[in-house]
Amino acid sequence: MAELRTTLALEEEEEDEPEYVQFKVILLGDGAVGKTSLAMRFCQDHFAKQYKQTIGVDFFVKRVTLRQETGDVNVCMQIWDIGGQSIGGKMVTSYIFGSHAVVLCYDITNYQSFQHLEDWYSLVRRTFAGAQMPYVALMANKQDLSHIRAVKPEKHSQFADENDLYSYLVSARTGENVSPSFYRIAADLAGVTLSRPELEVTQNPCKAEIINHQTTRRGPPRDQRRGHSQVGQELRRHVIRSALRAPCCLPSSPSPPPMLPDPAPSC
Image (cartoon, rainbow, N blue to C red; front, side, top):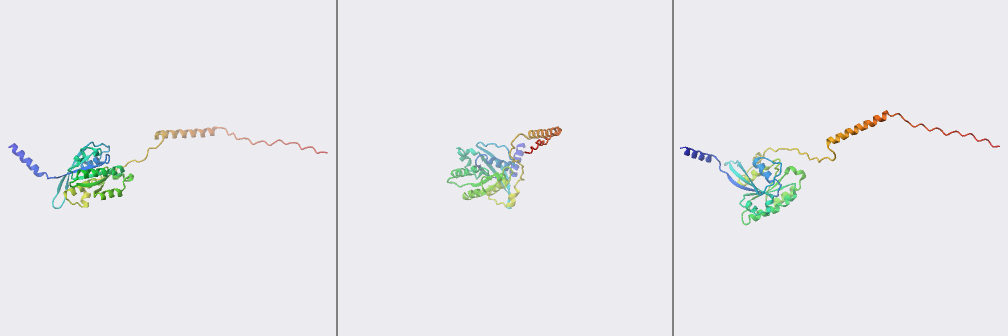
């Protein structure tokens, strides 16, 4: 009887749990462009300030619900974070094969990471040679550092247009546009059309951070400079007091030359 109740409970749980459509999403790009930070920001809403290199591949899972009038669509996104050094490895094509979406990531402050996207995209085309290409997107990370941008927006748009890629501008540090971008990818894969307000709702609150960009001052530390300033002031006071105490020694005016007698008249 107890076994029958357990079986019925499991069946009820399975009926209550919604069915998910699963998609495999690959993040490609050079090391340190922020692929892991993007995955963590989307899946966990977390940003790690310390950089940790991804060796091989790392995995993240995010379940999202796409609302529509005909019924909600539940999507399970399996995000594969491929290490930047894997471009020359033997396993990278195995990681990419079978993916539904490929996201090419680069750092807008690192022009070399943008140039290397040609190699990453060529690797994707070779992997899917003779088969249907997956959904491919171009994602520019670190938009919060636009004041030191090395890749102009025109270059980004040109590369996306030439290769027929979907374009996204995000910041893993602040979270700007990260969730809406991945929600848009999930909706495109599931065949669901999301309006702009529906995408904006998925945006988590961005956290502002004040960073001191002032360069280090040259010279001794502030406390030491304060000590030097006090010593200088005391020295000036001592010199002034010494000058006031000294007797006034003005130079005497020169005495006039002695008067010579008049010469005697000549006879």
